[in-house]
Length: 84
Image (cartoon, rainbow, N blue to C red; front, side, top):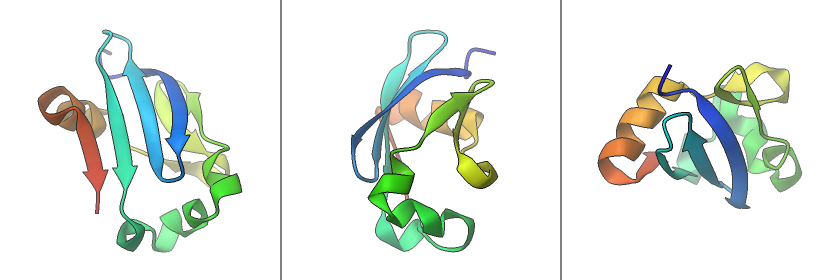
């Protein structure tokens, strides 16, 4: 799919640079108040830096992932997806 993520890089803690299969690129920025529940481990910079792409999805260990279609839509429109 066009929203498949092909590259993810940590720009800084809580900010990711993303590139999709169609060449669209942008950022995902986490707000600290969003880091609850399943996302709580992302508060640790070492854990956050373990991000990788698995079958077109931004993923961390322990099956933490982000919805690529929602991410694509926001990045396509605004250049950034802010999770708050």
